Image (cartoon, rainbow, N blue to C red; front, side, top):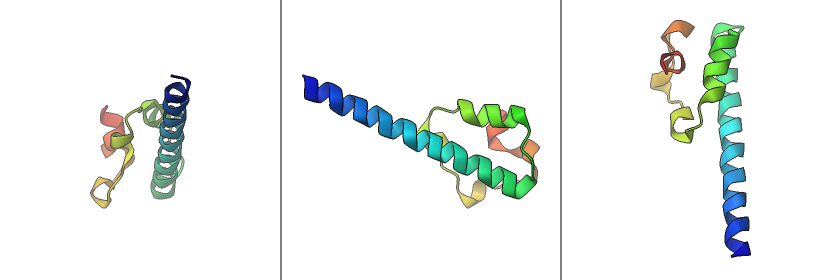
Length: 73
């Protein structure tokens, strides 16, 4: 039972770490593309807790920050 609890806790920690990493990656991409990222846009990205939603492909690159998929959540 203890090993299951520890395994679950470790997995949750890994997922949280990956979420934080992806959020930072996305914010860096937005900043590189558009300059300063507005606080409200940062808050929207930081609230995403589904790792699948944080994977960005080339097709997700937008022309301006208002078109960003992250602002439509």
